[in-house]
Length: 605
Ligand code: ATP
Ligand code: MG
Image 1 (cartoon, rainbow, N blue to C red):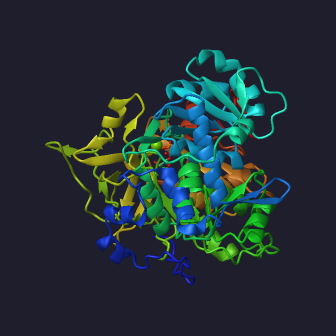
Image 2: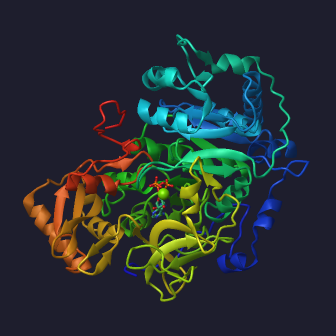
Image 3: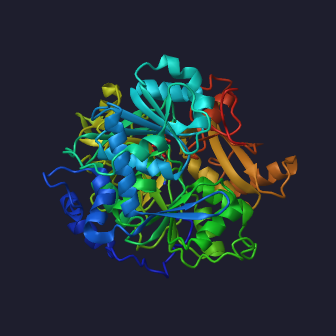
C-alpha cells in the first residue's frame, strides 16, 4: 500500500448513523433495511411513495426537497409537499394520455426541476422510467427509444427539434412527446407539459405496487461496448435507502449535491431517489460546469455531502494544484462540507491526497455498476480511508475475488469457482446475488444476463484485489487489463502513478500489441495548464513512471492528448484509445462525450 491511511478527524454528523462498520456488518439484514421504510398499506412497495409521501404523511411536507440554482445563481425552493403535488399531477397526466402500468416513459433533459415530478410521477403511476443523456445525438436516442419500447418521451422544445424530430417517424410506438419548460412554438405531434400539469389533479393515490414490478430501465455507460438495458424493480429502493445511509451518511435536512448527469444511473438512484428517502435537501444545479461556480455552490448553499466523479475532482485539481496554497478554494468557505464521495471510475490516490491537502476534506471512493443498482463497495462514511482503495463491501453485500484461468475467464473446478485466498492476489470481482437493487434482466437479452452468473456468483467484469484487512483495490476492467511479458498490468495503477507527476492532469493507459512482449504499455496523457507537450517532458514522464512502477509495468510510450475520449458519465474510454491506436473499427460511440467524430454528435468541447 503506497500511501498512508487517512484517519478521519471529523466524524459524520447526520442524525441517522450506524457508527461501527464491523458491528453493522455482523448484524445487518436487508429485511432490517426494509423496516426502515414504510411500505404501502397492502404490503406493496413503491419508490415514489418512499421518496416523498412518507415524509408528507409524517407531517414533514414543509421540508425543503429541492433547491434549484439557476445559471444566474438565483435560487428557488421546492418543498416535499410541492414535490408530491407535482408527482401526483404527472401520474394523472400519464393516465390521461391512456398509458398503462409497465409502459416506458423516457426522459431526455438536463437537470431541471421538471425532471423530479416526471421521475416521481412515473414511478408513482407504476410506469417505467428510462432516463437518457440530453447530450446524446439523434441516433443513440433513436436506438434506445426503440430498444426500450418508448411510449412517452419528456424532453424540451430545443432538444426535440435537434434530436427527435427527424427520427420520430421511425418510432410508431412513441405516442406522446411532452415538452418541459418554456415552449414557444410546439412542433406538431408534441404537447406542452406545463399545460397538462396545470389541468391535472394533484390527487393520485399510489396504486398497488408489487416490489418486483419493473420500475427503472437504465442503459449502461457503454464503456466496454454496446450499452445494455438493465432492468430494476421497486424493491431497489430498499438498497438505495440503506446504502445512502452507510456510504453517504445522509439524514433529514442534509444539504446534498449529486453532480451526476440525470441520464446516468447515479443521477437517478443517488441524484433523486436515495436522498429523498432520507428527507435530504437536494441541490439542483441548472447551470454549466465551471470550477468557480462549483466552489461557489458548495459554499453559498452550505452543501454537507457532495457526490461527484473522479473526472470532476480531477478538473478541480487541474485548477487547484497541490502546493498552490489553497489558491482557488481560498475565497470559498467549504466548512459545511463533511466529505466528498466519488463514483464511476477509479479514484486515483492522488485525488484523495489532494482533497485532504487542498480542501481539508476526506474523499470517499464508491464502487458500483448500473447492474448492481446501488453502491456495493465503499469507504464507509465513518471509517478511515486508504487512498487508492474502493473501500469495503457495505453491510449486506458479500464480495469475493475469483481466480481466473489462462483464457482470462473465471476458473471452474467441476462447475465451482475458486475464490482467491491470498491477500493482494488479483482476480475477478464477484458478488453474491440477493441485495434488493440487483438488476433483474438485460432488456430483451436474457442470454447476456444469464452469462453474468456462475456457481451462484454475479461476475462484475472488473478485476480487483483484496488486502489482508478486507479492503478492495480496483485493478481494471477485465477487457482493459494488459498482459505484458508475463505480467498482468492494471491500467489504473499506471495511470495513478503518472498522475503523481505535477504535469499530468489525466491519463488513459492501454496495451499495444508487441511481437516480443505480447503487449507493451502505452499511456495517453493530458497536461495541467502551464505545461507544454514537449519531447523533454515525455522523456521525464517515462523516467518518472519507470522509477515509480519498475520497468516491467511502466509505459514504454507516451502520447500527449488534451482530449481523452470519455463516456458521458465521465469514464475514460480505453477501448477507443486502443481502437484508434490499432486502426480498428471504433465500435459503438453512442455514449462518447467531447470532440465527437460523428458529425451529428452533440459533444461538449
Ligand atoms: P458498459 O457496461 O456499457 O461497458 P460501464 O460499465 O462503464 O459501461 P456503468 O455501469 O456506468 O457502465 O459503470 C460501472 C463500471 O464503472 C464498473 O464496472 C467499473 O468498471 C467502473 N467503476 C465504477 N465505480 C468505480 C470505482 N469507484 N472504481 C473503479 N471503477 C469504478
Ligand atoms: Mg459495465
